[in-house]
Length: 57
Image (tube, rainbow, N blue to C red):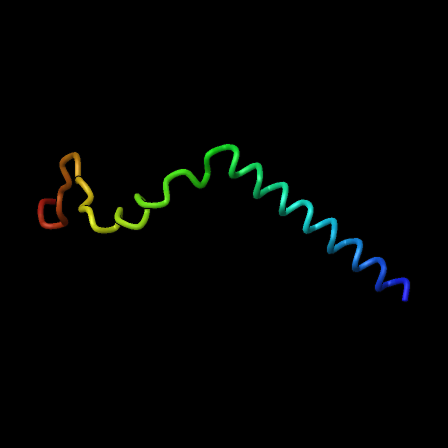
């Protein structure tokens, strides 16, 4: 029965830690832009610099 109390205590402690991490992420702006990551895959990447192919060597 003692282990049950221990596990309940640990689970409550972990829930408080995860809740604190969620509030920290929300206050630091982690969830501000939810639209851009969904459409970022639709844009082509700009390739900069001169890339040589294997035939040029």
